[in-house]
Image 1 (cartoon, rainbow, N blue to C red):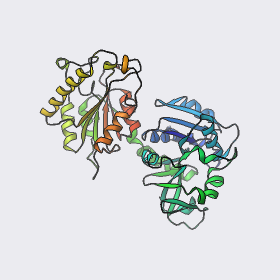
Image 2: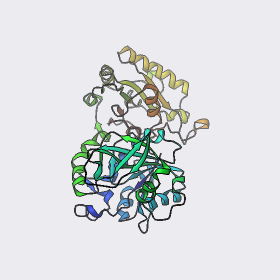
Image 3: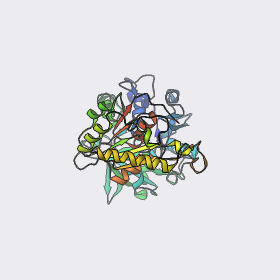
Image 4: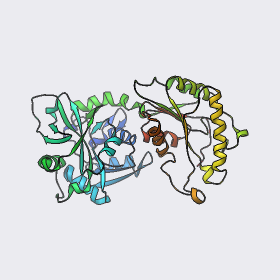
Length: 410
């Protein structure tokens, strides 16, 4: 999912409290707002960010460079402001995009972006909406039969209702015939809504824009605790992980995702023989507690040793059969195990890149789909940054990095 972020606004109303920075770089208790926004989007499978930049763009380019947490970052630079629509159209043209998720760089919305993306595949436009207590402050959105019927002007009536949350699933055809400079909202969406009849998606969680000092102050109070679950907790033993398990939310099925080498068994450089298996202290106690709290136990492991010819998939299967047996004996049977045998420097058929290889989230997403796992209430334990990064990209709520001195094998 490619994401176009509108990050070029002047932020005039915010300059009294955010000085010498572009609005998306406003400080939220030590972290730029844009970084929190990208972290939030990463959790739903974003694989490339295109930042539309203009005013004080150097601050953004210096901070993010050409990658954010391993995901490519590219820039669509406006030498002069093109308006929100012109900025998006330029990004689509510049990078030959057929479709993209488009979001405002000054608005934080908690929503299932992966579902939003998948549900409206093929639509020229879908709009994310949010129910608020005072819709007239933002401009009310009217809907009918699953589609947006109209966009209303702002007013002082103060009634509850739906507003445009500033996130869109858009295809390139939407911008055909539009000029170089235009407003996405005023010049495209509002006058053409009757013809476009865009589908809509309701975001039912947290929403805030930081466009005015009052909402910026609220973001500084609220966002740090809200996004804390996406941060990594570092521990030195598995015993410390037990306190980080939370009871399963009603109606949800969480999983405890476990890397293998370094978390389940002591990492001794491409372990694949049963006689070399030594279990990490505390693994069975952790898994028994998780099982008792309703968690699925799922292994997600890179196995580059297969790709490099150190052992075979049959060797891996024999080893894992032994591991499964030991977990069953100790009252915490594994629910599933996923492995990636591929590596870009591998041999023969194994020499390739793969969406399953961590830090990519493929294995976690497949496991969640197979077992009906709620990722936000799930926990991942890994001993490498690539493990927790895969969890972050998949949307796992609690990420734990076990620092045990294990080697970081490629």
